Picture 1: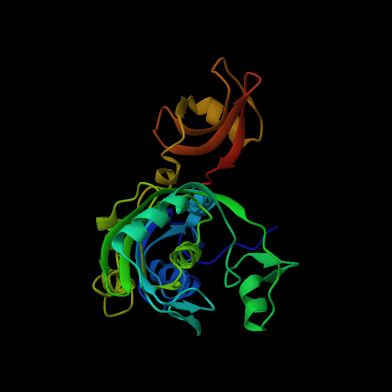
Picture 2: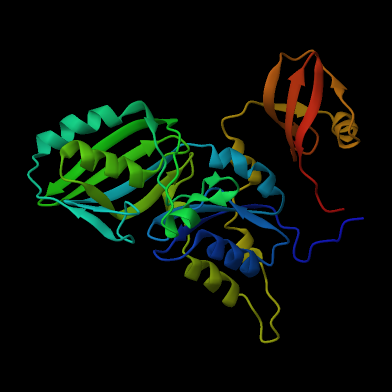
Length: 311
């Protein structure tokens, strides 16, 4: 029998406004501790240099974090022209300096080739693995390995400002996109080199920018609701959680009778005349409680991800 996790059985998603310099995992652990949650997970790490939206999943919401990891993202980025770094951002060492002889029209012309369906070679300073080792660990040892170009999609790559040797962009992209690599590639096309100076994630899937909270704000919600004996009223904190099923906004939904929900919880299938679907979010029609993600194949409903609620 598995050991019971310590902590509250709290389920939901909190949108953290990540501070510059902090690691995503460190923020995850701090949010978990503040909420007293039994388990937590994030939906794709941000570089230490980057700021902005970091959805943290608590409890059963961790079962659906992959859907946010796979979702589109949007970023604000400031590119420093004339310098390439080994990490393609301002945290790295400058490896090449060139004169910036670039016009606004040059940028507008060259970024077109980096928009739409393209292939991108991931940076060595990434968490992708080679023979079980993260690439960034190999890079820090001075080791470079061949990386296969991966298909990504840049939905939009808008120039917001261009002054001297700096340019601001807004990028809307698919999963797997490295903004550092995008800016490095643009710098190479411009012939002057470039790296990321400022990076802020402004959107993950459909989540609203104005719902983000800094780590300090989250901590204050706990401190302001703690009595002299250290007991916490979690009401204010829990009110900031988004329902776990918001990670599944793109999926169709169905309502199931209570008896059918119980059948699925027993690991059995439910007969149906509904059309086939690989993934559907299911609710109990009697209670409107979110049940999980199911598939409908060959006239049967089968469980894919089931929410376990406390007894």
